[in-house]
Image (tube, rainbow, N blue to C red; front, side):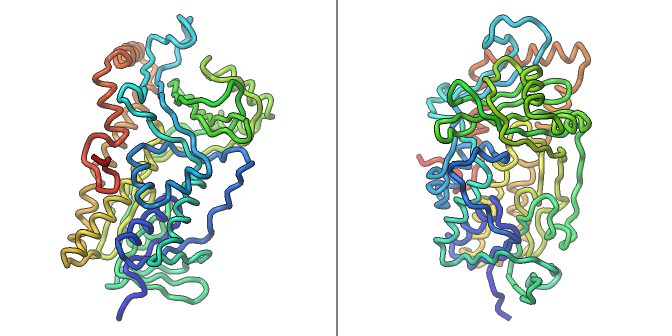
Length: 417
């Protein structure tokens, strides 16, 4: 029996919508199922709490999918500098002359920026706009899935309105608590970190920023991300890692008391805080699916992996999943192979699993290194930061890798030569 679609995608968030755009461009007949559409863009509202740092490689993917033009037309915030240091209880030489600070600057690579900070909802809306322009993509939303069957030759989704949808390939882009992953019996390993992360959107004085920074403490980083201006007002996103009890206290504080606590605990690089526009918290958990693929099933994004958000790489890893999966499926189909077969899908898993695992290991190394108060280790890591801050060749290599200027990249993410 002919399936309803070549590919069915569960989840129309950033990663799921990107898969749909990529496969629709490649000529696959795609169905995308989600329980609710993204909220409409509110141009006069303060930036949303949920934001992502998008690398240049991710931007290239979004451009080629036809989404970036829609995203940029709403609002984005470029950043040109990124600083990392450990917050120490010693007198400062000067406000911006920390001996243990490593500063990454786009100008070192003759690039205009290191990346963009963009609200997740805006990225999703841009991808949905791109999906609408593809005749080969159908969005089935709102819809509730009651049953997922993956053992047959054609995976099936049964919806609560009685419909049954079939495809040659089912893609799980449905997040960390993936129904697809569970239904396919793929399994997942998980590790809960001791800390939680509190995020807050604040209005700031002094005009827009072009820098993001992280100051490490024994309970986790204190971080700032610049956000786009709205109606002449400047904003920033603050991230405060702390123990769960402390996070609960911070969330319960009155606005003025909370902002006072931020001023007292964050580094002096913090701009003037004028108002709080929202705060929320989330637990930190590392997850890695035991398998990314089975015959007729593939996982992408948070359904396959979640990492410590220290360097903001989670969403960029998800977009690389998208680009590699689309490339793997397209090449297999063009060669006359069964793109839903285990042999083909394992090519996608091979391209992604090691990169994702390596990023997890790096983030865990940072987490454990800076959570340790043993004096010799503390001295060693600060010497390391000081040396790294003065080693231009090493800085450039790290930047080039993070920006997608080095390493093996899928076609959608490669720079034009």
